[in-house]
Amino acid sequence: MNEEPTLVVSKIRNGTVIDHIPAGKALDILSVLGIAGKEGLRIAVLMNVESKKLGKKDIIKIEGKRLSPQDVSAIALIAPTATINIIEDFAVVEKYKVTVPNIVVDVLACPNPTCISNKKGELVRTRFKLVSGNPLKLQCEYCGTIISGDEVVKFVIKRK
Ligand code: CTP
Ligand code: ZN
Image 1 (spheres, rainbow, N blue to C red):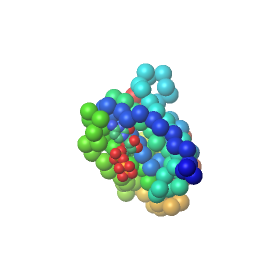
Image 2 (cartoon, rainbow, N blue to C red):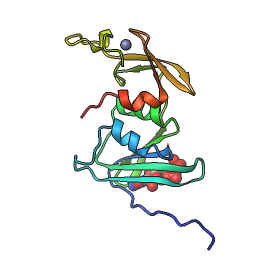
Image 3 (cartoon, rainbow, N blue to C red):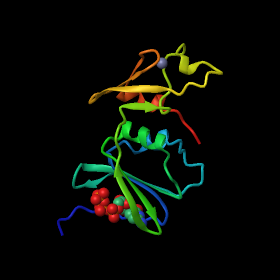
Image 4 (cartoon, protein in one colour):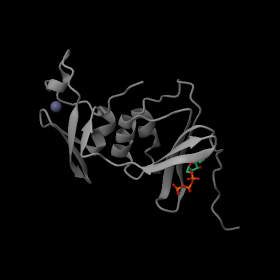
């Protein structure tokens, strides 16, 4: 009787559930995944719902979507507590926690316009070294430019 009201959202058949997202970060994650809502994917976004581990959390359920390794790295930079659940025929067939790699390859664009990784015609994949986890700091291996946690969303390379 004294229980908090819960927000009931249906299970998905096939796709990906990104769970244990820090409260308030779901929209940043949709942004780095390049999802604006016009793609026609069926998506449920839950924000500020009760979590035993985190107090409050966000959840994103995306029907029919598989994440690339770059997607998972980008999620880890924004939501280090996130869990990825792969759903097939309503069952969780794979579950893992995201991790921030020590070298983040081909996920972030360098903010420095003169960096070799921004030269047209050069097929250089961007490489950022994790110099600090909390607060988050990443450094371009080519030019030394630093990206901090609050800038990550701005510099994630959007792909389709
Ligand atoms: N989920 C879903 N559709 C399914 C299966 C699971 O949307 N067909 C969602 C659940 O609602 C939950 C997440 O995927 O948000 C993980 O599901 P599950 O492993 O069953 O839940 P928990 O055991 O509570 O997960 P955890 O231990 O990671 O907290
Ligand atoms: Zn650079």
